[in-house]
Amino acid sequence: MKDDKYEIFISTLGADLLRELLAIFETQFCEGIVELDKNMREENYKKASTLAHMLKSSAKNVGAYEIGEIFHHIEKNPEKTLRSECLSHLKVLYGLFREETKTFWTSS
Image 1 (tube, rainbow, N blue to C red):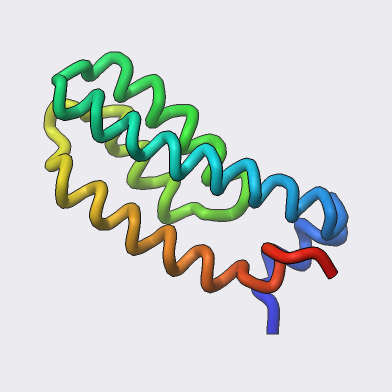
Image 2 (image 1 turned 60 degrees about the vertical axis):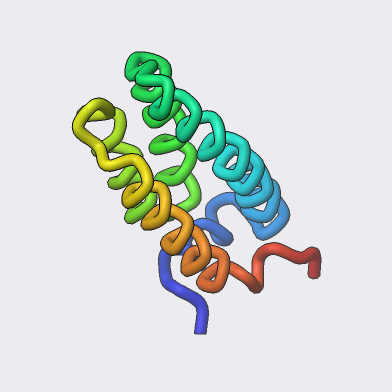
């Protein structure tokens, strides 16, 4: 059974647009997390915060609210974020999100 939030997305946006948004999010997440890691390692907290804000918005747009909350934390407190722990947690949540949305990742 599909999650209600995705039923709402489909009824509002259509399945094709939802798939496109998920694909965009996947690209942004995979590229963004590498860049975020680099910025945090280099202590470039302004860039890390800006990137985290963009990733937070992208995550929330596709219903990945837990991922969005972690990006929100990074956005507000990049210098106080435990980089390796936070990035590991994001990767786990992303895997769970992919599993939750797997029926939308391929064309019907």
